Image (cartoon, rainbow, N blue to C red; front, side, top):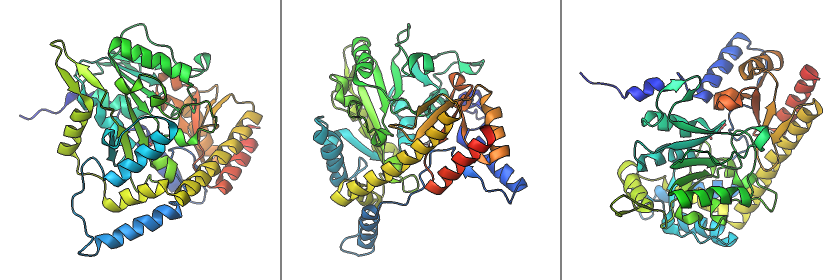
Length: 407
Ligand code: MLT
């Protein structure tokens, strides 16, 4: 008789954003005349930058002609895109990342979910709490979590991100092997400076650990002293894998394109001193399980780095950051303690109430959808997250509704 992967029964019944979507659609069904403003999942609202659309369409045209048609592409991504990424996102900022260290994929979600496959089942995983649920759930599925108890798992090391530590958790007392860090942080919107990240890089070098650094929101950084990449920290290439995405940067949530950097210096030695290259392993993994991102999508992503593309992306980011400012000001005006909304599209507020109760109250009384903090982890209880990915009109309307309801 076939047996299931019993680790699945340790998961929460449904993925956070699916639970929210279900609640919202039920509310809409029962209240068809109400206009709901969705500030829950961080999904972009502005269309693709025109430079990306032009590149996308002309690549589709190429696919329709016999002499320019392309079949399977390289699993790691086309060289033209990997070179544009290396040159613009890294070399231009003084980091030595080569195209063969970049792996183009269909999303930061899948990369951050799949990367754990490179490590043994018994590695100790450290995750921030609250956290983007994918890092945790995929380690549960892989059998690393131990049993669930009181909203947490026995074998996971939680790094609480709370106001008391400015959402920059300390290095834990126990030794951890695989460390997930996300800055600008999802969900709290907090940012990390170089001094903070250096502590982790030094720790990882000393303890032979690996950091998975999720930098999906780096484009929202406006402060000059905040690092955009973990590789701005000396020695990080030996111990860190970085995940980035075109989703939030250039509006690719529905188009799908991201990339992961696995430096060649990331070498793991086993007890017999045999060396394993994570770059070679990830290449092996991707070429076995993935056939690459479509050619037109990669051309569209390449256009992000053209002169017009850069300008258009910057305008879109500025638009969302202005939304975030409006929302944050409204919430602060109402007396809420807020994080994020600067260098981040997310605003994290301390509601002083149960997260789901606050969520239900906002949906019911103001038809605004937020994300309950407890859905991201135990340390998120009492908080909710607002996403600034919306139209200006909706953000202004939401700010007014919040003032009326909570003022
Ligand atoms: C979020 O709202 O946290 C993100 O949109 C989720 C994601 O990027 O998958």
